[in-house]
Image (cartoon, rainbow, N blue to C red; front, side, top):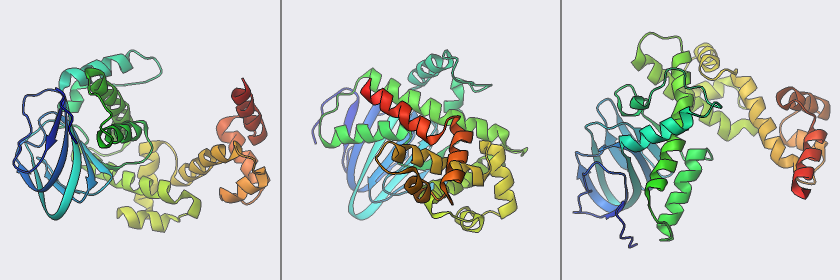
Length: 302
């Protein structure tokens, strides 16, 4: 892979990343690597193959394939020590870019920022955490970037980083609100609690069609059933049960666009019968499944 651009560097063993405080993307292919300058700016660390160990000022993380870490600028280290090739993408976003993205989004009346400020993304209060690469707007942006790197088809510009920063701001707006909704005095307790709740939510998203019980969910995130149920509703606004129902209905919307019958869709989405499915669908979306299908077909033909 050879991409010679101002914003990109291919890191191999013995090559030290540029530390100039600018927006940068690094693609690494290493067996052994160590640096004490892992978080030069706001950082997105994405592992593609193998395992990478990070140490921030507060925690240590072992980042596996298709997982990424979001964290603020701080002192910290990265270590790779493997008998097989480890691959990763490491993104630095400077404060000016985060500030610009924040101002653009904050000017949009569709979003309520409450007391979230742009400086939050570079402060010790930032909620650093590991996420699985799935299908959020930020996930899709990262997947497109990785695809461009692999295919040698991406051209990095300031707009590349501004688009990433916008996705990061929106991603973290939800976390910030969830933290504020949790009924705890200590910020460190809130952060740890939200990490566990997000683990439980990820488990629910991966298994919503399997009808996971609360016992299975709390085992995955190491919480009591009562504490999880109460805290989940505080953080996200819905009960765990309603969240799973909403995920099923969201999936049902994709099936409605096919030629399958509503009865078949109801069964696939875990509803006892068509009546129960239709009632839940209309309660969430305000229209019946048949009305939704009709409107979808009208959009396609328009």
